[in-house]
Length: 137
Image (cartoon, rainbow, N blue to C red; front, side):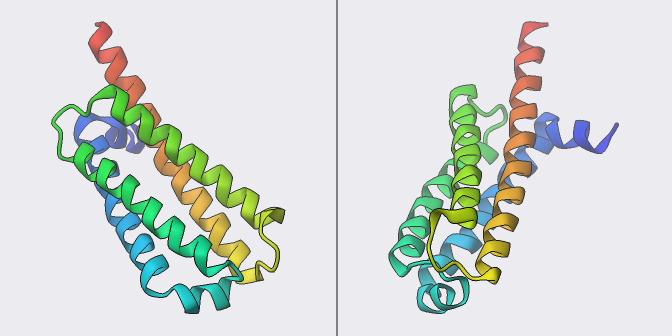
C-alpha cells in the first residue's frame, strides 16, 4: 500500500485528523500565549494573532472530534477541508501583501503554515473521496 493510500484509508484519515488537531493546538496556543513575541518576530498584529489563535481552536475541536469517529461524517469532514483550504489561502494572502510590515520570518511562517495546511486538507479531501467511493460500491 502506498503512503498516500495508507494516509487516506479510514485509519490513516483518523491519524491525519489527529495530527491536524494536535498541530493546531500547538499553533493556537502559541498565537494566544506568545502574542507579543510573535507579533514582534513575524510582523503580524497582536489582534490578528489573538483572533487567529481563537479561530484555530474551532478547527482543533472539529478535527479532534472527527479523529475520534470510526467513520467521520462526510459533511463535517467537508467543512474542515473547506476551512483548511480557506486558511491556507488566507496565510498566502497575508504573506504576499495582505499585512503591512510582515517580516521575512513572518512570510516564512505563513508560507510554511499554508503548505502544511494544504497538505492536510488534500489528504483529508482524498480520504473524503475515498469514503464516498467506498459507499458507492
